[in-house]
Amino acid sequence: HAPAPQAPIHQTQQQQQQQFQTVRVTVPPGMAPGQKLGVRTGQGEAPTTVTIPPRNQWQYGAGGAQFAVRIPKKAAPPNRPVVVQGTYTAGGGGATSHPQAYQPHSMPHQQHQLRPWQSWDSFRGKSYDPAPLGMRRPDVVSPPGAPSMRPSGRRRALLVGINYPGTRAELRGCVNDARNMKRVLTSEGFRDDPTHIVMLVDEGGGADSRNNTKPTRSNIMRGMQWLVHDACPGDVLFFHFSGHGAQVPDRTGHEADGFNETILPVDFKSAGQISDDEIWGNLVWPLKSGVRLTSLMDCCHSGTGLDLPFEYDLRGRRWVEDINPAHSQGDVVQFSGCEDAQTSADAVGGGGDPFSKYQAGGAMTQSFIRAHQENPRATYPSFMDSIHRHLKRRGFRQRPALTSSQSFDVSSRIFSFAADDDGGGIKPNGNAEIGRIKRKHIKPGRANGGSRTVMDALSGAATVAGFMAIGGMFLGD
Image (cartoon, rainbow, N blue to C red; front, side, top):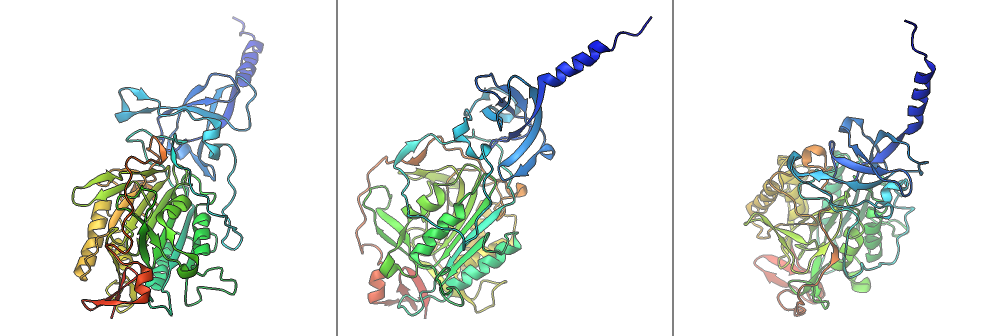
């Protein structure tokens, strides 16, 4: 028999080529290989369901993880496909839930290429704009048990160390803390340049002729804005403060103890303190789902210094939500030197490598680094236990605190500076609503009630059991 005509086959191939197109799809935060996405390439058309491929087929850029897929060509495509629906199946089977519909306005990192990070010298801060009160639906909500996100590889840090030299509240080890933390971060892959690490200290070259790196209120507020500026899902951020902390009565009725926790810039007497509301508004509220921020605050009254809604009960081994929580989208974890009602110690020696034996430093910072040196892959409870053990061994009564913007399984998640896959990755947002909610009005705390403010301490110091209680921190005689 004569062979069948070839023209129809060629024509069919052309038709098939015309019917399909290759598009790049951004993986939404919290989703993993094997899960389904609905992708729409034209206005008004029904979405096409695609399966997220294995991670080895993903490509990474400033906008996050992407993969290429061929889908039927129903209309001329826009510049970027829009993911309109994601699905998640718990345990690999059972009912499938639809946690959200991804609209173009709700996932801005899919719509345009984010700009490269700015260096400290070129960044210009703005006046503080408080986050709006009330609750709203977030851009992204991931279901319970959703997989963690992989980090993008971009890392950034803001380190603040203030000794307040020449004042009656002078400390000795806070600048050392900032320098030692910088050494740890660079060993963990943070790049040591003005685009990736900024250190604000008040001695030893910490202030240039323009006061660009002096830890003033203005520079610290600008530094917080610099840290989170243009952060996109997958980015890893770190904030460290070592210095004085205090409390002031909370007139809004939100704080459970009636006080706002504060940190003190070097010019606090003229410029004022920085409250936990301002820190939350600058550092936490702006973060998108999938951005990781780790904070270490080595100062007095720092237990809830970032106003994060979940506090980990070390004894009960569970998360406890604040009575008036402030919810957000980012993956933020804070390690505090003490509980809200406690003071934090400025110590000499005992930190181990990379410190000299008699180097002054914050007891929390030294114990934090020492615990990480001993076990770089510790789970969160194990890490916290190790920090507390080091503090107790050196005679300090302060109890470190752990707070978070997201509740997570602490027993299976490993603390990691880089939030790498082995450390559990980055937790996508699981909060169904974000913002500040007021469930109960709390009366303001009594000024000068249970603890003396730094202002009072500056006018007179009292010696207690061989230590001098000044500004909330303990200064060894």
